[in-house]
Length: 121
Image 1: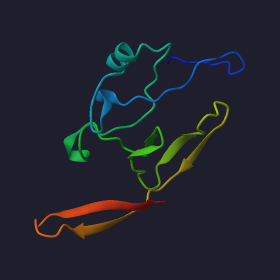
Image 2: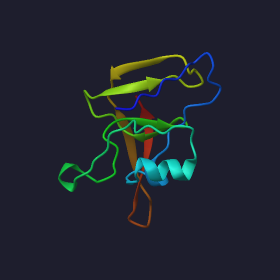
Image 3: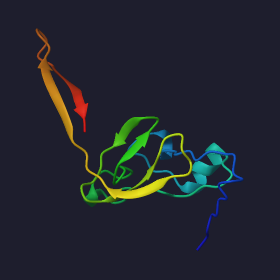
Image 4: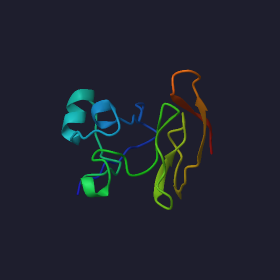
């Protein structure tokens, strides 16, 4: 086991999340992500689908928010690590859920339907 111990009173860097291959779903090894992003340290901090029987390989298996955008929904009942934006000193663990509401509108004349997210809880 490797342990990364960060002395918060001395550390002046930042903690930055990174998606494998920049998209969901996408599989990329931690070594490849580190080579692409050149970090001081790299930690695999997420869970994702590996086998097709469990879903789409590379899809995140839980909630992920990057730059304020919902990237992947919560898996109801699964705990998540919560880090406050612009606050490197507070973290918590909680079971989260995602609730999405959408409205679907027909586009007149072309037989297509447009869906837009109305709100996120």
